[in-house]
Length: 176
Image (tube, rainbow, N blue to C red; front, side, top):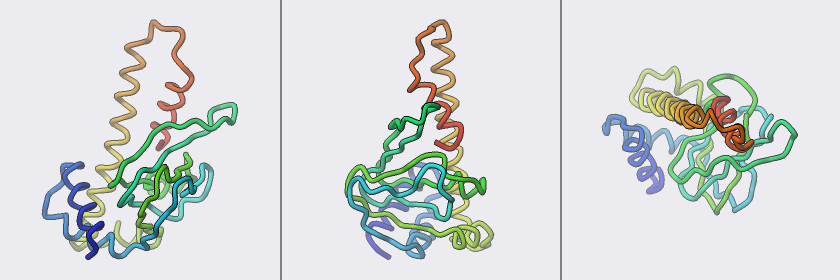
């Protein structure tokens, strides 16, 4: 197993509060992926594009951008390695809801939709560890949306809630 896969699996297990025994099977899942170096500013996936893969950010930082109702792209978030992204569209069998791009040089493991489907059905330790990671990632993302709603409701008396706040909330609820 590669060092980035081992480190990423251990950190993701800790970050998502998963069973530490899932670290090795998860690292083995990452080894089944195509790992590539992605230069800074390169687009990884496009808003509105088809969801053909899930991504595991092993090193670097990835930015998330979404178009507002006027078609203007706005930066919404930044992910630091290790992180999982692109799973919402695969689970929902829908189009990408945001554009993700490399903010720095990155190492990314690409997990194609066939392997994704295989792992979602796989009864062994790798499938189990992968499913828990996907479920946890989705719950964390939706939890972030709920916190943003609470924040906005706390400011409900304000008439001047910024468009970017609303765009971020909308994006979070739609998978970004």
